[in-house]
Length: 229
Image 1: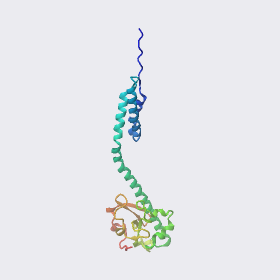
Image 2: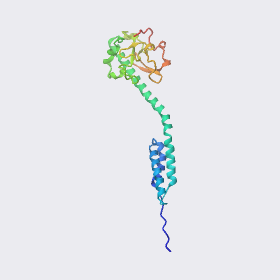
Image 3: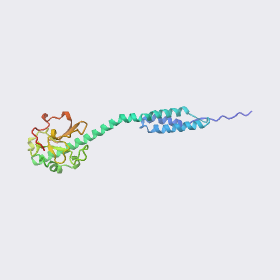
Image 4: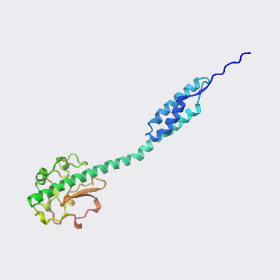
């Protein structure tokens, strides 16, 4: 009596691939998880239609479940990472503004060193422009519509170069535009542009960011008696 041959079953390659992609998905920006979910569904359909020739339904189900759970985490991960990326972007803009402030302050210092006096408050942008390699430093990254996003300490206007302390504020952020001058108290933006603080450039050509509550004229940071623009 001849015995009937039983079909040899094999494990579905799609099911295996689905589970592997589901496992590595969270480590590769979840893109493999999406592929794993699709492959797992296809594997389940093919296994169901194979009449026993394919096995691995458990692997396919595991791949679908793990991939689905991983993809469900995308909104949560985005909510967690968005503030991090946003702060990194703001930090980069702040540092660019610090660099701008430093370049402008160095130009003011170079003008004073060469001419013996500090630039006039009414023409300071025009006066220092020849000392700048790139005029784009006048533009603050958080105030791109302004030709100049900084103002000049009017108390320095025409002051002898050797009469100004190194830590005197020379320039600071302002929304007043080209050749604007005055005092920080008068002319700082109503809302700090960079992470709750402002950038200042000093008479020695240095620059730094300071939190808005930390700025004080009486603390050796700006000369008293600065006149209105």
